[in-house]
Image (cartoon, rainbow, N blue to C red; front, top):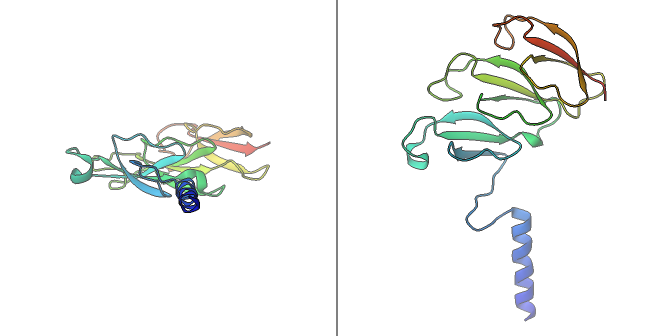
Length: 164
């Protein structure tokens, strides 16, 4: 009886620590999922490719996702436009890659996001005007850049400052 109790305790601890559940695959910091799957909270899409064997008979059906919630404040990630922008992150640039986000990539198909939450007070950041302004920041200026944030419109840059 005592032996079964010890084995049950070890099994329960293994499930709790490792996150292993029957029929579910545990996600690491970077994982591959089929495009038909939903993107877990806190994860971003960093690359799109094609895998007919694993994900079916369509192009751009394999997503490489990364857990953005574990990166340090101020860190940058390049993400595909289909990726959600996690809470506390800002878009600092929009650029083009013909390979990173699928075979049908087009102009301005990469967003660079930066983790803004946790940055020190009075930190200034230049963000794209399309970016959300995170809690604790205020807009202090608007400007135009021909090279940053797609460069196709006036006032496409906002400067934000951490105030709380």
